[in-house]
Length: 147
Image 1 (cartoon, helix red, strand yellow):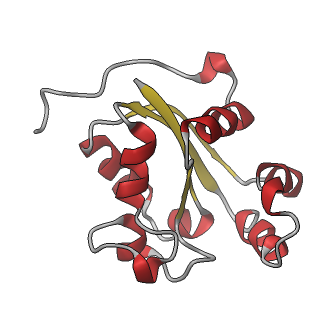
Image 2 (cartoon, helix red, strand yellow; image 1 turned 90 degrees about the vertical axis):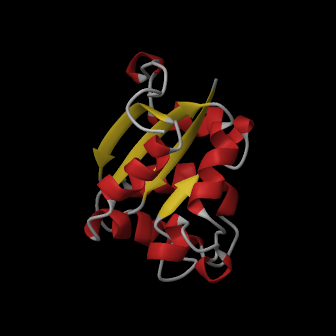
């Protein structure tokens, strides 16, 4: 089993999409292993997105990510990283496939509703950035409720 990390960004929270987004992950046989609802602090956003510090969009990214509450998720299941990235769709919503979260809900690349880890290595780092080991539960995804 693999664990990945997701942020439902402030526009997803403000847009009333928390349940819809989590439902899409759960219907794909992913378990919510950890969850936090919080407004990300500037220092946290700067640390989490440090790899983008030299890019021109960094100040706008930090401002957006600190503009309201977000939902932080650790999701577990078979091929969790790949599965979540498929469910989310392309980073640029204009290139996202119909039925993906970003195609269905994101207004633009800068406010693309969700963040997710792009590899198992980044997933481990990102989960550890936001969650202590004791906060992460382990249980199998449902198999008997729905297909």
